[in-house]
Length: 106
Length: 400
Image 1 (cartoon, rainbow over the protein chains, first blue to last red):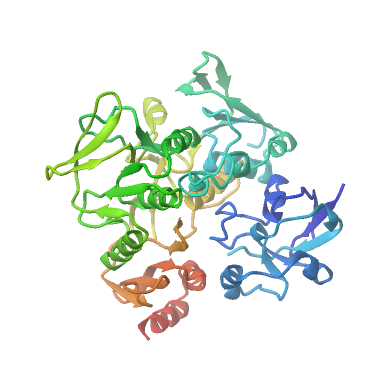
Image 2 (cartoon, each protein chain N blue to C red; image 1 turned 120 degrees about the horizontal axis):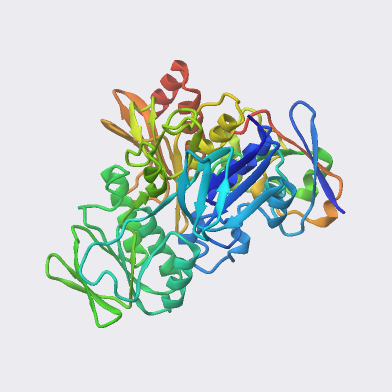
């Protein structure tokens, strides 16, 4: 089973199975991963599903789009590989993917 | 307390967040989620948008997967609740069964305000709150037909946009002298009227409905002015009312919503409530407010779960809202209650992106941001963190 690891800001790790076609946000919420609030349910409206993709995976996962970029641009915890996880459709071939969670979801 | 049986009544955004947060806050006992719709709890905001436009299935709108409830050991029960028997600590279900609880949360939501006019019960008159209502609208939404929408609020306007995308003729009837009258500045109302007119919607203001006419099925809508509008079907979007009958009958204090405190406790401290069914004194605005929004439901549910588990949390988040119509994403940070001035960034009479900042005594209190996610995030952060320096900076930025 392909899995993704969510790492909290203080190093706690949570694994979840990658379900093809789901968004990374859905993977997180369906597996009760702490630290992903996803208040708007995946419409890129709230910015509370911010994740920082491991650099080694950044190209495979893809970079943020223009709207996402605007939502993330004012975030103090923003990193070059930051994404809104609701905008990331996952693939089973991403087994071993690691993303970090910010300390605060804004 | 963190064991025994926690029962959550109402299986929508607030209820689902509540069961999620109960586990996170350490509830180790049983959790039962009671809802009166049999489908897996689904997201409601897309009902008037992507779901109505036929762009997604109900399954894709599930707030959590079926598997989630299994893994989190949450039992889902499909039933209505007839009564809360507080002395016995039991619910009486529509099936006649009784369900005992050690902790109880009410997330009973809201229901559409009914149109009070002659003919309002004719066939072809629809309301939009549940997936079943949208499915009935979709059966009627055949390209080329005439849809009449009663109410120029967010639901009415989102519905108008979705029906235009399906190729219907759409008329919006608003009783007030402008659309979104209750929630935005006149300049923002004028913007949405312009956009909908450009998209081919017939927007009529000062248009009160006198009667719906037809034999068994609605055929036309007659206005107080005497005019009439041809209608193959009608959608009523004139607001929602909190669903509080259960709480009232149980003797809980209800004031335009089940009254809750900052810890989401009702007037019975052993019963919490969250979501559209509640009203709450919000210190930020100095008054009692019933918020109709998913973010508020989620926030209150997180707090309610903490309260049940004996952990100390308070409702503190800034209210915010969003609405999608055509290519427009409207994001609203804060409530513009009692604003005395606005500052506009961009030109809403011409552009499709702008921000309208609302000020009270010179301080920003809210912003309507259309296709301006950056302005939204900036304002939300400033209003949330709320340091004097931040506010001064935002005010200065706005004033430029």
